[in-house]
Picture (cartoon, rainbow, N blue to C red):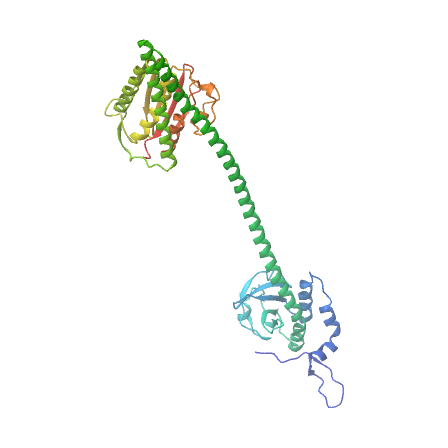
Length: 436
């Protein structure tokens, strides 16, 4: 039910009714100038709440709230309210009315609004429109008493509506500014992350170039050392007539040739590893048989080099319990690279190969009676681009251990030097048996 306009003034003149409604808003303002001035007196940025409180007091409404229409939706968001505890800012609700209305029995409608008002009996809503006459919000008042003087209350709310439209615009602009600030902050954060990544990439690139330069220097030494030996002794062979010396020189040239061939083989291995080399599938591996074959191969190499070095194998399991499911390729290649080093630097004594197996991994250990590793080089020897002084190792850096470490990294294995071992070199590595 729409209330009759009861907000009236006393007319002068005979024949006139004592109570007549105002014919124009201007006439209403003229006779209510004090309230209008009070309503419009606040002009500061934080005066919205004051205006709504004044409006609630003038219209005798329990709550007066400014609500913004959400774009493209028939929903409204509370911008501010004269009673924030009953109408929290940012509350979204649906509202179908776009024209001023009042009702003496509106509890069913009031119950759908975001106002926790018990016993609400009436409400007034005034549309808030922009300069193009488009609806941008509503000015809503709810009363807990019977609404009276509807015409005057609606006119007061209409007077306030243009100011509310400006406030709705400001709210929208503030929201846009906050979104822009959040986006700028997000972009700045992304820029910072990208800048950090770029700096790191530049550092890694510079470091990589430096390491590659060191690697090429070491590799050049590895190639030039046996090549110089081969060329030098080839010249001596041409000049000597002593058969014993010729045989000795031929043996030295042969050993240097094997060393050069080993460097070339390692280069091929590096090339395969750098090109995402695919390992052979896992298969049953009989460790005792494998280690025996490796022992025979390297014992023959030592015999040809004339070294008094014995290779010993220590088996912790007896066949067929020594069978594991793993990659025979990885184990063979890693052991070969370690034994290449041991045979190169061990001139007398013994090289020992041993293993132990548990339910998760197989652990291997190779020891020799050579000069061992110089303190501080235990980790660098596994770095493919590491810098190890030639004088430290006497016979070149060697890249075999770095190749071994790379192969183990493909299957989750580990390799390290036992620094506590004092009788030569001790290299350990593990390979998982539960992942292949």
